[in-house]
Amino acid sequence: MRLGVLDIGSNTGHLLVVDAHPGARPLPAYSHKAELRLAEALDGDRLSAGGQAALLRFVEESLRVAEDKGVQDVMAFATSAVREAVDGEEVLAAIRAATGVDIRVLPGAEEARLTFLAVRRWFGWSSGRLLVMDIGGGSLEIAAGLEEAPDVAVSLPLGAGRLTREWLTGDPPPPGQVRELRRMVRAEIGRVVGDVVRGGRPDHAVATSKTFRQLARIAGAAPSAEGPYVRRSLSRADLAGWAERLPGMPAAERAALPGVSAGRAPQLAAGALVADAAMDLFDVDRLEICPWALREGVILRRLDMMSAG
Image 1: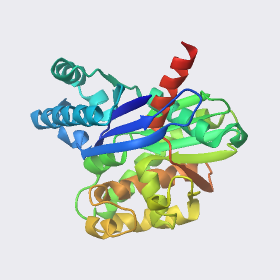
Image 2: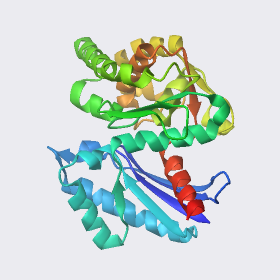
Image 3: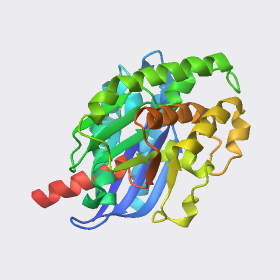
C-alpha cells in the first residue's frame, strides 16, 4: 500500500510517500518538504499567528501532494516545537477541523524509541547492542538496547536550532557564548550517561538525521547522491576538529561546506557541540550513519500493527 508520513519538525515539515507492505522494506516514492521553522515561530511559549498559518498551509499542500501521488493513508506527527508550545494541542485541533488531518504529538521518549526501531531494522540483529543518537531542531534523542525496543530512551532539550536561538548570538558567536554552551551541553548529557550505559557498551553506535549527516559529510563521508546503501560514518577525531572550527565560522562560510544547506548552516555549530559532547561522554570512537530515522520508525510500527491485526 502507499502511505504518507507527515512529519512536523522544529525546523522542517516533511511529507514522505512510501510504498510499504508488512514484511517488506518501505520504498520511498516521493518527498515534499518546506522550511517551517516552528521553533523560531514561538512567541514566548505560544505558536505565533504566522507559524500557525505556515503550518496549516503546509498541511494543506501535503494533502494535495498525497492525493496526487495516490496515497491511501496519511500518518501525521509533530515533535518538540509543537510539543512544547502551550497552545500546541489547540493549534492541532484547529488544523484537524480545517483539514481532517489528526496530527499526533510524539513524546520525546517515544521519538527515541521509534528512531531506535528504524535503526534496528536497518542494521539487523547481528548489530548487537545499539546506541542510537539523533539531534533534531529542538531535542536530542538517545536510546540503547539489544532488542527492537530499547532498554532506555531519553530526550534532552539539546536540539541544534533551540541551542542556537537561546545561547548563540552574532555571526559567528562570541567565544564566551560557545564555551558556556559547551559546558551546559556536557552537563545535560552527563546526567543521563549512567542510565544509558547501564546495560553495557554498545556493539554499534549509530547516528541519524540531518545534523549528523551534514557533520559526516563535511568530515568526508559520501554525498547523499551516492544513495542510502553506501556506508557512512563519523569519527570522534574528525568531529572534534569540526566542533572547534565551526563556531568560529560565519554561517555563509559553513553553508559553503559540502552537504550543508544555507537554512541549516546557522545551527550547525551548536549541533557539532552536541554531537562532540555525546561521542566524548559515551566514549564512542566512531558513529555509523543510518539513513532511516523517525519517519521510517513510524512506518515500521504501523506495518507491525497491520500484521498483528
